[in-house]
Amino acid sequence: MKDISLGRDFSPSVNVGSSSVHGQGIIATHAISKDQRVFVFHGLRIHSPYVPEAGLFSSLFPNALGMNDDVWVCPESKENLGTFLNHSCDPSGYVGHGMIIRALRPIKRGEEVTIDYSTTEGDQYWSMTCHCASPKCRGTLYASNTPYWKRASQEQTV
Ligand SMILES: [Zn+2]
Image (cartoon, rainbow, N blue to C red; front, side, top):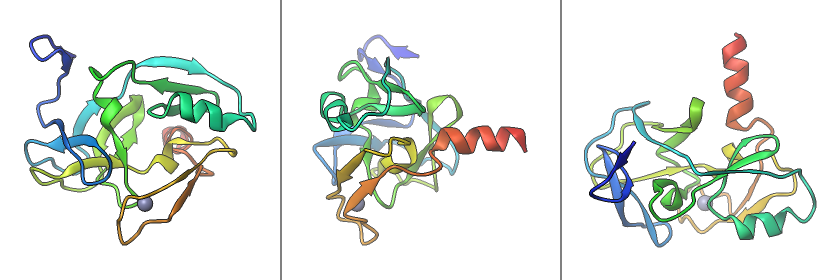
């Protein structure tokens, strides 16, 4: 859904603002309940096999999120909220079925919506240095053995 007047993805509960993690981020304009839908992450679908040169892919498409083993979704512009979705090692949000960003816990007005990038990557060659400054910061991020899309498909079969 688009808000034409803003020219940017519309979400009733967030807007783009100053981030405590990195540059600009997605900031709650209203209190958000646990598991509440925040926005749909969308963009260009890019097919890429896992290769050791994947670092190049990450640098070309730093905002892309993994959708499954070889498809990433890359926000196309600053009109996409996903462009501003930052990582935190102590995230307030997560990626659910249909690439819907949801609240991992109650989020207060003014708090940033972040996800754990490791939960969206299955690429064994991927890593990223983290400066999120959370007490839980892992320093270097690596791909999860069970990225969200694998967990989602497991949940659907249970
Ligand atoms: Zn961190």
